[in-house]
Image (tube, rainbow, N blue to C red):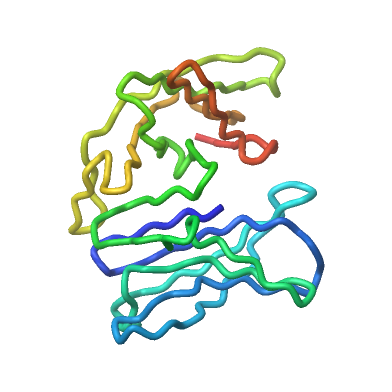
Amino acid sequence: FVQTKYYAQYLRTYDVIVKNLGSNKTVYIHHKTISGTWTDLPCTYIRNVNSNFELWRVENSALYNPTLDNQFAVKYVVNGVTYWDNNNGTDYILNANDGIILGKNINVLSNDVGYIDVRNLSYNKNIEIIYSTDNWKTVKTVNASYVSEYSFGYTTIKSPNAVGTERWRYNFPESGAKYFAIKYTVNGTTYWDNNFGANYYSSY
């Protein structure tokens, strides 16, 4: 799984989830350059997301590394074996002002508290935030609302973007500590983002 942001060629952030197949591993964003060659951007381990998977990340500023093109794949080397996620052979394409790209098999993702990114699978959809203020003894629901465009710095990003990712937003009606997960229902199917089983936490 890879989640990528690209804002007006200022900053690219790549989040990669890999299965923990061994302690000796490296994760790269294999990126095309404007000259046509390819380079590896090494990712840094961030944290475990559950007992079997890890989050790795690399950030790149195009101001300091302007040689990158918009095409990339994920390279995972562990136990002497190299695994690839190249978007089924087509590579990932990340253009200026595209915003968020969701990796395959990821249809909903809590980006920051208050915002959700979903894959636009159909016009009719319902996105809810399921949360609890008493450690899941009781649960409450907040509906998210569609955002047609949003700003990041000097950039305006359309929703959905060129790769079909939509942005939605929500507000909790009460302050204080709470755990929550995201429920996305579309075409009769429900997708969850519960932070890989750990749920999300907000103190606001």
